[in-house]
Image (cartoon, rainbow, N blue to C red; front, side, top):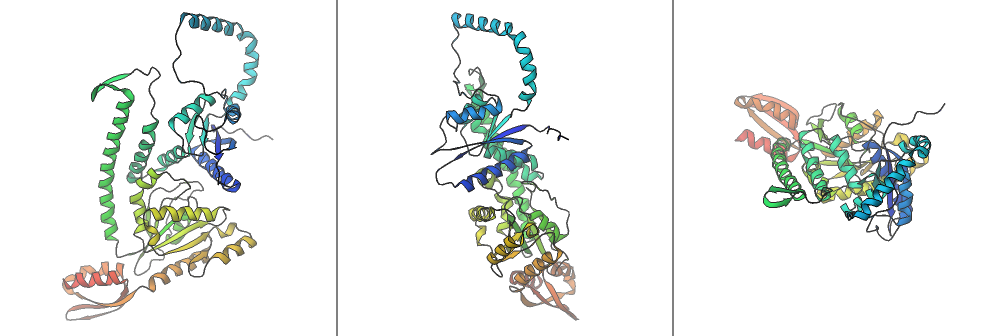
Length: 462
């Protein structure tokens, strides 16, 4: 029995292998782009690649490959000219004659068209290029293929735009999207539109770009206000023990978050399922509490505008006491993916935070690969586990607590009877080892991080 045809629109992936890029790395980049395109809602019907010293200035690919690409989309493979045609009486007469000839041939062409109509529906409607391309290159590709053209940055921005849920994430993504769209705005087909706006005779496209700049400025102001609220929340948690889960997209961070915190965070087998930072307490709950944060995933060639826009979100990682670099050990490219994670975190200075590497998805590895990765995992610096194995999660939980235990100090707190309201905060921030009472109030022997113990002592003595 034949499988039903997919109703999803079709796309063709295009890549140019530049000097210094290995065949394996090039194939990996295109495979990853295919997954991004699928996440965006398209089926990839073909991949067109070419080895070149540089992207073709006109339309990324050379003429021969451009023709091959056009066969998948129904275009003619010719860039053509974007200039308006000169209107003359001879040209107008020729156009009328050609139109009459075409109508006369309709009767003969009808049967062929009906046969090919199904084939036409199989054509790809989108071309996705695995490089950041200029607006001119995109326009030329559209002329040659007759399809919509997106580059890798455009695909990632669109996915972020669809998946953003919180108010902060939506603002961050909208800023990145507008910055991406602004230089790609096009003049209207007539090319002579004028608007009486700021400055007489301002072109429509100039007016649109000014509106985008104004909108971005407005969004940045709103985002700054939200970031202030986030800073207040982070300061309130500054004495608490915090662990940040960071890593490549789809490495299993959310699955690990769910296993460690017993929370119902979103878990999906797709790229960029999580864009918002989620903070939950480690379960079973510890004294002092340990907070686990799940952050946005990274990917190769992550647009700089998105890194900049999500800087406040990534600040959660920067302020963590411990970072767990989650790696999909079942992915053949996991070493390159870890390098991407380290690079992005290095941009915000988070590479200075103490860290451990977590080789996740061990349940998907065969014995030989598992043994090889286990040998790479330096004792105390890396672990190999599965987020779905309760024993592995228990071992990770113990590792987290052992890390914090080595930094904890003992201290004494005297809580006057007039300040008993502070007891709840004390129990949240430190571990109470013993508790006695006298005429002054409660005498507590506590164990916790030095900063938390010192702050509580200052608060109670003030």
